Length: 82
Ligand code: FES
Image 1 (cartoon, rainbow, N blue to C red):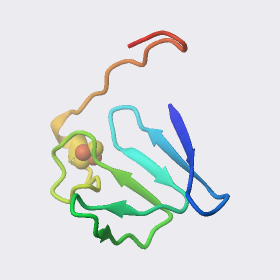
Image 2 (image 1 turned 135 degrees about the vertical axis):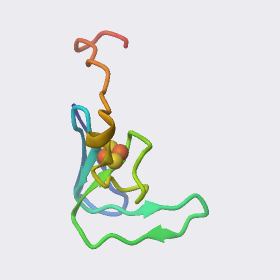
Image 3 (image 1 turned 90 degrees about the vertical axis):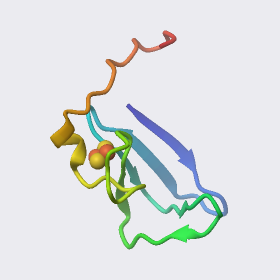
């Protein structure tokens, strides 16, 4: 599954890929903000964001999802509600 959204102030596209049984891969030009609004630095154009909740490097994936056997739900058929 890939979701795309435009960035503000430019024509670059950010893509977000939900990896089966793993993180969300974010590619493009983006900023990640902490709850208080400060930018969480990232020097990479592609980052993996944790969606299993186990990472010790949140919001980034540290690979722990593999150790705990994190699984994602099967995707709903296209056009069907989950
Ligand atoms: S998705 Fe990788 S550690 Fe959570």
